[in-house]
Length: 597
Image (cartoon, rainbow, N blue to C red; front, top):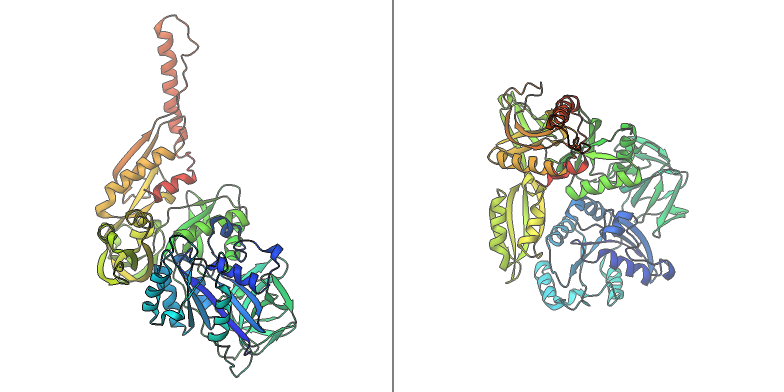
């Protein structure tokens, strides 16, 4: 055990975590040179295409008679939950900072997460080979944050491999070996995947005891007994071994077929009376959207896809939902819009599902007759006369930016209903702005505008701080005089008219033309009985009907022949409008138009 070192790499997005992991694999000869490729630990196609890490990935390396267990983590704020799970399974963390960008918002957020777990932190400045690198300046900045000596911070280039060997030596010298704990077998499940042949495969960190094939195990959280079918290590592929010992990180084939039995954060033990390990805080989804199948696909297939993804992504929330327009589906909760996008893409690729995703919204807390409940979709919002109070979630945001963009960013935050807290100075030229904002304000285009007004230099991190009262109402959309449930949104009362106008204009651009005229209407407080009692149309637009030139075949003759054909076409159009009402197919672009209003 004295020769085991468990650590992970944490950093802001695109600061070089996966590239550094590649160099480690090369140096320790864990992967043959001919099999090496960029972002080797990013195994999903989506990760390779986008150049980002989505899932944590463990790997076991051997170097100078030591076993080094590395967990590569994501950098994006939407996947912070993956980082917190990785930190619970290790004793140390490499804090990586880009030599061109310096300390960013997620650098700070991940640093504080590591401090909470009392981990040994090794600070590293990466990308010193770039022409615009400022290694000495960034080293001073990082030393001030960590309150350490300048000589404690290594300067490396993960791309060229310069200085990487020193990191491995520092890991062995500074990160402590796992502590021996007395007692029976206990292991922390920090991730799990589903294999069609093996069933549920749990990724574990052994706290005490050892495991081998044939051992009887017990999952304390779900009260599920099972038997170990296989154990092994990550190299980075699964390599079978005889046993797993205290302090090691590896995988266990549990033999379970039920996906819900093996929860991330659960404790695996050999005795049902063993005290459980400290798991993870239940994650709170921040963004909710409805996911429905297009015609011809069973909701059963969608449920199976969501359950399998949920096994590897514990932050995904879903519950059944029924829409009059779209049929049976699921109301899903995500940590952010990127998370939503990734889940949608994974369902499409891995399970071959053709989906409709409704406009995302946040969860609101409503009070009716002194009872409180959380609603996840605009359709659940009752009529205004029934409501006593409605509250929306608020977040605290930290924006790290050069001083020059302070005015632009304060103006943007004020436009988004932000409450200014204070300004912190990182260096004479870089500051941290602290604001409180409604979550719905940063949901759609806040990040894009932030990058735009700061010329790409500002970075953002946010955390949920609770619920506060708000003045909102439901905005429904009628297409061809029929309510389209999935296009409904919740808007601030003082913004309702401008939002309604933008949505109707956007839909006019994306909805396909029909053989009849289509009316698009934005309605406040629409009565679902269809009589529009109390409903107020605040914006509308029309898509004119397709028109065939019925007079093209005429060649001369009396003008009445032409009029007769046009009148006949007019009567046909009127009849089509009656028949075609509600038969407009809503394309996916329409939901995006509502989102990007």
